[in-house]
Image 1 (cartoon, rainbow, N blue to C red):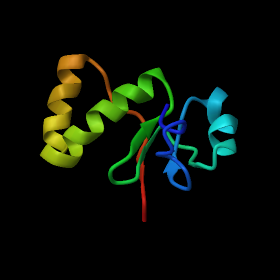
Image 2: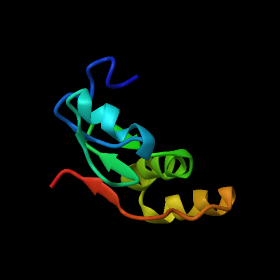
Image 3: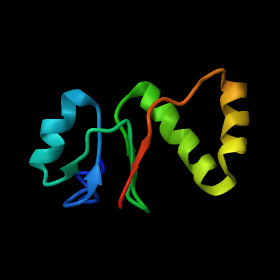
Length: 86
């Protein structure tokens, strides 16, 4: 949907591994990561990486301790690093 709206064109992003070729065909810069943060566009690759995406704004705005608290409530542990534009 983001690509159809033109929001991913030329931008780093990710999606489910089965849809990465389609996303690249729509001129996105596909990054092999669970979560990709390009400032005002944050994308994730699948179901559990969607949980990682949901936790990322908590980390970004409130800090790692707050995100750990949310992880505890969810009984979920984030996996992998978030890709951010250098």
